[in-house]
Length: 261
Image 1 (cartoon, helix red, strand yellow):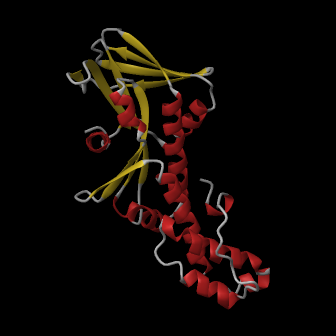
Image 2 (cartoon, one colour):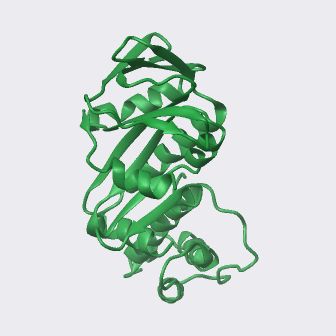
Image 3 (tube, helix red, strand yellow):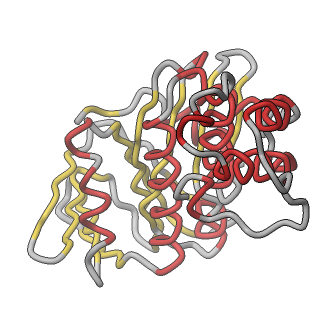
């Protein structure tokens, strides 16, 4: 685990689903009474650029395709378009719960939970995951930011997360990235990390526990305990769901999902 080189970019924008087939609502527009490979190909061609507003067209094509027997399904030459559309729509549904920002200069995306701003306004500490997706969506990273907000100045040295019987340790760097916010009338400090692939499962382990406590420890041994709240937990879950869908997709599918939100 290393200190994220993306967190300042994220803070600038943040602070100042099962896939389609498993969760689709019913629509009045029905598939043809007797679907054929030709009619399914036609319906798929009508989908166009995938956005959430194109859900009825995707549903119609999927319903028609599912009417076919295996031999007829094999004749649907553009099925890959429908498969990609389902995956793109699933990603877009997950991202609809989150804050997505695009940097036109760096040509990359930051994806975070709206809970960040809400918790800051309430002067609440928190655990904030966010996703960084590189230009052309070729690389995807999961990051986590720990934010302390309180009545005392704490220059963070270490953060310990207790979830059930397990304890997770995050060692901070020596720079002080905090200060006093006059509008909040509170002290704050921030530490951010990029999670290694084998560490991303930690989030799921945390969410599986009824109580998660983050202990903020200063260089002077001052401590502050923050218990993960229900909104923070939901934000964490929403970001993890989006990450899993993005990570399972090809860079091409990721890019289409992000560019056409």
